[in-house]
Image 1 (cartoon, rainbow, N blue to C red):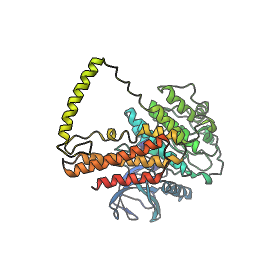
Image 2 (tube, rainbow, N blue to C red):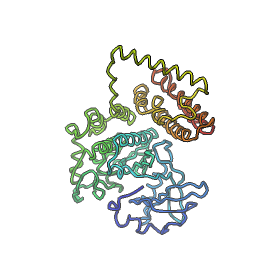
Image 3 (cartoon, rainbow, N blue to C red):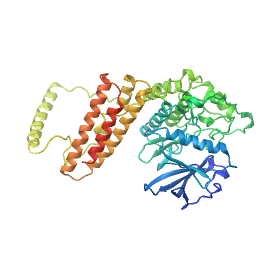
Length: 466
């Protein structure tokens, strides 16, 4: 979890005192052996560590001891509880919450990569940007389905590993919706000194999380107007922050600017109806609704927003080739007949069943699976099956696709053999079953069923063991 050192106060830097335990590389915390500091912030220090029992690398978030603050401890434990309740491919997995030597910590999945804030700061392919923010949106939608409001969603709270997988993290400000009954007192914004704005200004008060009791909760640059006003945040407040993040990913700058909190609050309240920037009109329309000053005018839910985003962000279909003359068509047909005859003759001399021969060249995995499940199919099914009930099924299909792509690449890397052919045959059967399942869902001939999709996951795993 890289952190820009300029965004840290002296007390927050990795070299500063980390609390009574004075942790250092090589020390143990509980059963974990600490290896190196990954990052630091106002709430704690994150270490890469080793779990000796399971022999796996983990990330350990250690609470800073700030005058024995019980508030800080409560927030650390709240983060752990919130994350432990979420089981989703795009939410960071929590393994354990513990206390050792008077130090509270969370053991969680280690992601080798970067946060989206740092990743956005460098030129990235547009399709990778889109994939990352859509994946993060699915993680946020899963949190809402579990009754959790993040309250501080922003690029820095989304991790992206080296394979391009995105994980929402840092639920330290999250509250279960049923627990969130109190009103907050607005921050005295005039007491803050002005600060610049722009895409990346990590030392700006507008980028800094304000998390003290009785003041604004969240990071102002991504906060919804109701949070500025001191009202309790809800799922549509997260939706607002998410749309700011998507806008930033697609244009390189955030939609709202101000030299201080007063100006930023005014900009957020004014909305983006007159602002287009580099956004295509359909994309602007979707984000503008999510950035409405009135929460009731935003999208009804994250799944509804994501369905529309996926629809407008899909690449334009390739135009059909122009029609050829009838004489040319006849020639092509004759050529095809001759080629087919040769292929049939060759086929009877070898095993058949897999579209990829044991010694042949595989397709790119994403192309081989494209008609079974992908962004286009997800957008199509989201229209047929709207609502939060589809999130779990879609997440499982994402997992099937991820496992299938890895298993397919692994099989294709094997030397020509019966084992290679058997694995590819098995994977192609699973792919066809996925395509059949999603086809029935698209035709409305089947209901969403998580159990059936789970069997597809085990099917892919079975192919890998052949």
